[in-house]
Amino acid sequence: TDNQKKKYVCKLLFIFLLGHDIDFGHMEAVNLLSSNKYSEKQIGYLFISVLVNTNSDLIKLIIQSIKNDLSSRNPIHVNLAMQCIANIGSKEMAEAFGYDIPKLLVSGDTMDVVKQSAALCLLRLFRTSQEIIPGGEWTSRIVHLLNDQHLGVVTAAASLIDALVKRNP
Image 1 (cartoon, helix red, strand yellow):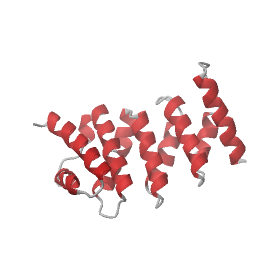
Image 2 (image 1 turned 90 degrees about the vertical axis):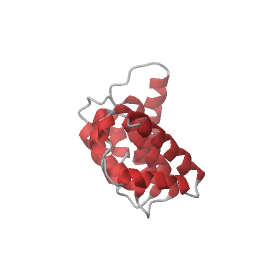
Image 3 (image 1 turned 120 degrees about the horizontal axis):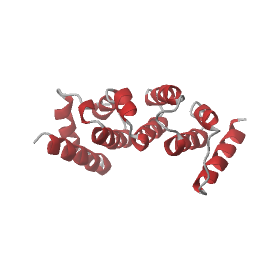
């Protein structure tokens, strides 16, 4: 069952934290990403963030699972996906999601906690690969996030704007 799978993947994480190499269990963690239960999905993302190498054969499956969660209506799933992208922060992640995350950031119907995560995720990807930031009107829309009622969105947007301005004074 998925609950047992979650438990075993947790044990593998613990073994890794004890300093041992883990070269199995990766597929089970990827399978947890497709779960609808928060705890199972969270453990899957945690395992992937910590243990999966960006050169792994599973990276295409992982990217597809993340894309599914980014397009989810559940903001918790969207947040988990963006946190995983930011934790991995590789060039592959920047190329795969550099177009989707700015749209989430400036969309009018995105929840504040998702906007905050999107700004921080975009900042991480920008630091990895500066060319992923598209030009155009969305950059001016980021500045409008400074007027948001949610303090987390404002501080995350300020950090992103700071990084963008330092690159293009």
